[in-house]
Figure (tube, rainbow over the protein chains, first blue to last red):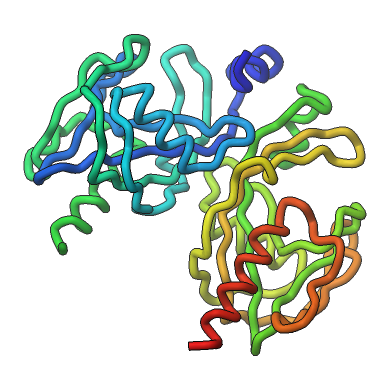
Length: 151
Length: 155
C-alpha cells in the first residue's frame, strides 16, 4: 500500500503536504503535455515523491509511468511553492504540493499514455500552448517558455 | 498549531512525509551549525513547510526562530532527498522530509538560540574539523557544501 493511501485512511480528505517532481519534455520548439483524466486540463508529467526516493528519480519514474518515455539528461528548471500549489482533487482530497521541475531534451521510447490518469498526450508548439492549463503548472510553463525564448 | 503537530494527533508515530527547507549560513570561511536539543547532533537551521508557505519563507522563518538571524538574501544550494531524508525520532515518530537547501552569506541580527530546539550555536572553520555527530539528515549537504567551498577557494 502506498504512503498516500495509508495516511488517507487516518486523515480523510484533510490537507496533506508533499513534494512533487515533474518534467517538461522539449523537442524542436514543442513541449509534450498530457490531458488529465481527473480535470480535463493540460498538464506536465509529474507526481509525488515516494519514501526514500531522490527527486530526480521521482521525475524520471513519473515521466515513464505517464508517457512511456525514458528521460536522458535532466536539467533543473526551478522549484515552485506558494499559494498556486493547493489542489483539491475531484474526490475532495486536499493537498499542498510544492514541486521541482526538470527540463528533458533527450529521451527514448514510444508515447504510451497511462490508462488511469492520462486521456491523451499531445505536442504543442511553445507559441500555441492551450489555455486550459492545470493551474499548478501554469507558472512553470510560463517560466520555461521565457527561458527557452532567450536561448 | 503547526501542520505536523496537527496531523500527528491523527496518525500517531506513523510515517509522515513533509518538505524541509533549510539554510547554510556562511561568513569568512566559517559555517554556523546548531547542536540540536533532541540529541541527534549538529545540523543546519531547517524546518518544515507550512501549508501555502514558500521554500524561501520557510527557510528564513526557521533561521530566525532557531538562530535569531535575519536572511537578507538566499541562494539555492540544492535539493536533498533519498534514504537519508528518512528518520525515526527518539519518541518513535517516523518522517521522510526531502529538503531544499539555501546558502545565506548576507544576514543581520544577533545570535540567539531557540531554547526548546537548539542547545548551542557555533561557527566552524570549513578548513577544520566538522563536529560529530552531524545530524543524519544534514550530513551529506554539509559535507557537499564544505567540499564545494574548498574547491572554489583553490581557483
